[in-house]
Length: 372
Image (cartoon, rainbow, N blue to C red; front, side, top):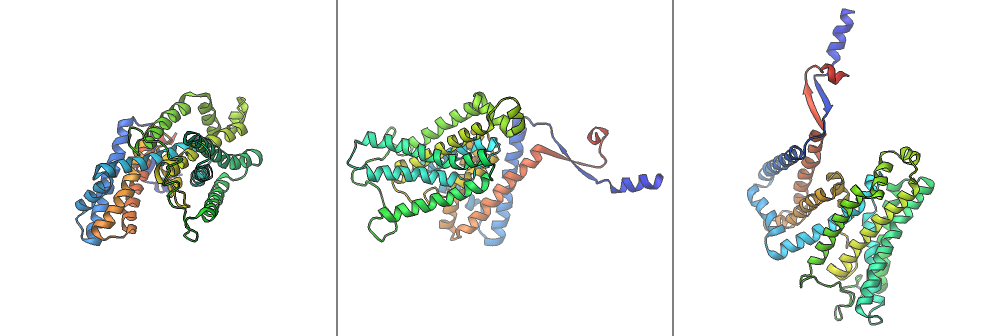
C-alpha cells in the first residue's frame, strides 16, 4: 500500500491548470494590455536582431501610417468601420455556433448587386431611386447568400463551414464574370470607376465628408447588434440554440427557423458592407474589393468574445497594424512579409493572453478543493 501511494505521489504533476472565476473587467483588460506591451518588446528585440533598425522608429512609422495626417486618420476609421461591420454580421451566427466563414462572399455579392444597379440603371431612373434600388439589392443579395447554407444546415445538417466557404468562391467567380462582361475598356480586365462623370449611384456624403457615412453606419449597426443580442427575444433564442439545440427544442424554440433567420441577418449586414465599399468608397467592383476582411472579421469577433463594443477596439487594432505595415515597408525598405510577422506576433500574444484570463496555473500539490 505504501509503495502504491508513493508511486501515485510521484506521478502527480507539479503544475496544475485551474479554471478561474470570471475576472472583473479591469483585471481582464490589464492582462490584455500587458500582453500587448510584452508583444511590442518581443517585436522590438526581433527587429533589432534581424534588421538593425531601431524598433522605436518602427513603431513610430506604424503610428504615422495609421494616424499621421487627417486623411490617414479618416481612412483608418473608415477601414475600421468596414471590418467592424463584417465582424458584427458574423457574430450572431457564431453565438449560435453556426460557423459562418462566408463573410467575404456575402460582402462581394452585396457589392456586385450594387454595381449591377449602378451600371444598368444609369440614366434610366433618378439618382435617389437608383440608390434605393442599390440598398434593397445589396441587402437582398447578402440575405440570399446567407440563406443558402442556412437552409442546407437546417434541413439536412450539412457542414456550414464548408458550405459558407464554398459560397465565397462562387461569389468571387460571379464578380470575375461580371467584371469581364462590363470591362472598360475591353480587354483591360477591370471596370474602372463606375459612373465617374455623372456620379450616379454614388452614396451621399455626410457633412461634406466622404468618410462619415461608413463610420455612421458602423456606429448604428454596433448599437443595434448590442441591443439585439442582449435584450431581444431573437438574441435570447440565439444564445439558447448556441448553448444546446436540444434544450432549445425542449423549451419550444424552432431551431431551424432561428438558424435561417440569423444567417439572413448576417448576410444582409455583409451585403450592406458591400454596398458601402462599392457605392460609397471605391465606386467600382473587383474580386478583391473586400480585401480579405471577411476572414479577418472572424478573428475580430472571436478576440472580442462576441461583444460588439469590444469589437470596436479589436477592429481599430487590426486596421492600425495593417496600415502601419505599409508604412514600415515604405520607410525602411522591409517587405510586407516582415510587417506581417510583427502583426502575427502581436496577435499571438493577444490571443494567448485569453488563456490566463480564463485559467490560472498552480505549482505544487492540488488542494482538496481543486481535487474535488
